[in-house]
Length: 150
Image (cartoon, rainbow, N blue to C red; front, side, top):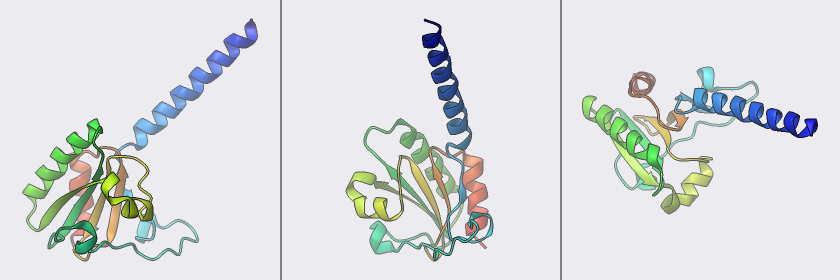
């Protein structure tokens, strides 16, 4: 009987820790692997990942592009669409592109998109400089553009 209580408490503790860690990491725009600076982990020799207009189906922004991978039943995707659209409207030369993850499976696999929304911040050449899994805050997106736009 007592063993069941300990198991239940252990599961509850593990779930709480998982939830707190996920909440803290959700939507945080981090440097993309291979982007240099704080995004490069020790020994990471991956080349910078870039996206072209033909891969996205639209022209890249002159200064930066905000790419959002979404899915049909993703509630945070609506919030992310609004935030990225507002930021793109505020900053000249910045475009917002929303892609349906199911319709772009090759890109999803290549870029290791494991959940929606996933947001990529591209510089003017299409190089991925920041990435977030989850809905980012508007202030964080604006700060990420500071890295993408020289």
